[in-house]
Length: 107
Image 1 (tube, one colour):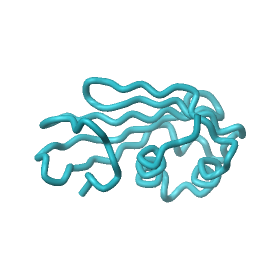
Image 2 (cartoon, helix red, strand yellow):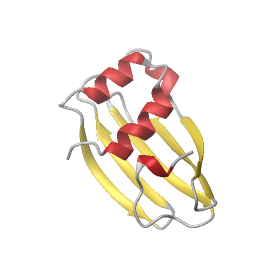
Image 3 (cartoon, helix red, strand yellow):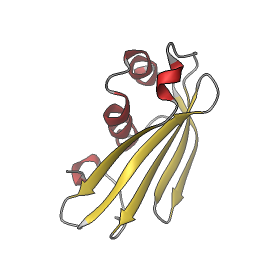
Image 4 (cartoon, one colour):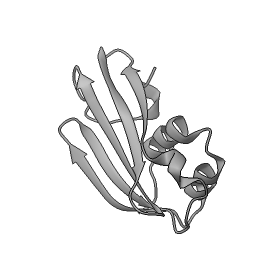
């Protein structure tokens, strides 16, 4: 599966300062191995098809957010699982999870 606009949005917020990861994610060979909707958000496993330079900088990253109009808040978190697999999770920690996540919902 290809990355969704929301996954790309979240990963851009999380990895904007790690150029090798950004380039690997923009590659057409980056694929989503698994995508699961959860009661609090979603979880994705992304195969990058290449090892990342300076991977130690990506052990775990978090970006907190608020949602417009829903009075909800939460966070995106990503971490490396091995040398070329990245896990991404979205969690609504306060308020209501929207029926559909889109980048336009985020403040």
